[in-house]
Length: 132
Image (cartoon, rainbow, N blue to C red; front, top):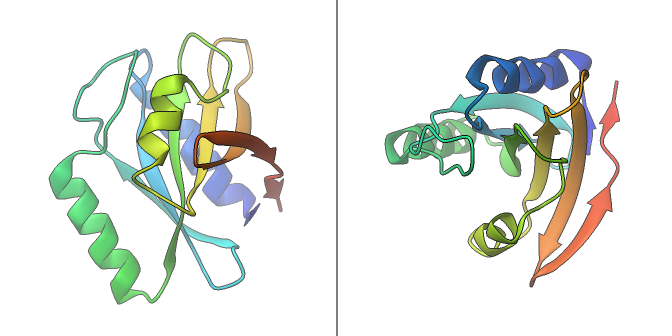
């Protein structure tokens, strides 16, 4: 996935602003998989250990993606105390979002560590996030 520096910075800023709780949101892409818009969402659990995009936020985001003729390219969230690697909960959650990439912002170190993952049928593979 390709993402502009401005959109990447929005994701990292959202993660920092929500700490110590996990943040969450959606990245909308165009047909070639390039990020076009970031939608920050509310973590309905307001928890440092798990996330779920709040229902009204999800409806608002999906409607906006449809209205703008974009695609749901990625779901992002943060790990505030662990490495930005998918947990078993993340893997289980990914089953509801086939084809979406997973961007995880790790905040455990001094600098954010952002990694992107493809999670399909329980299999996890890291993919490149190209920041332009």
